[in-house]
Image 1 (cartoon, rainbow, N blue to C red):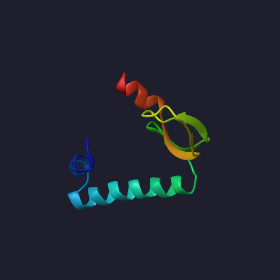
Image 2 (cartoon, one colour):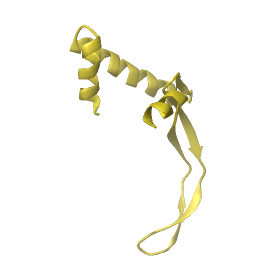
Image 3 (spheres, rainbow, N blue to C red):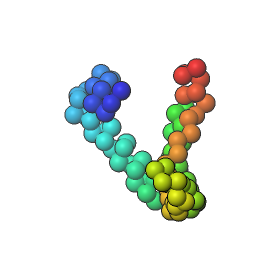
Image 4 (cartoon, one colour):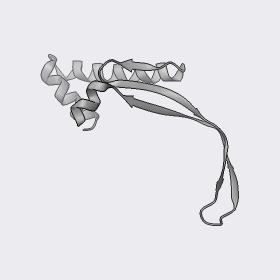
Length: 89
């Protein structure tokens, strides 16, 4: 399901497609802003989004086999909630 399909599904519950689009975009924006502030976002029954730090490490260039340094970085991690896990099983 992509963003447009999500909006169409939400429009069935809400009054208009315009309202559904506003809700979806607001949700995405607020999750992004919270993660940017390094806050966890927990949606009960769905899951938790969090920012995790990956330390610098050594790797290899796959073409030459030469060792390289990989910089430390931040990644977004999603941990599904119990209800979501059960719904998928």
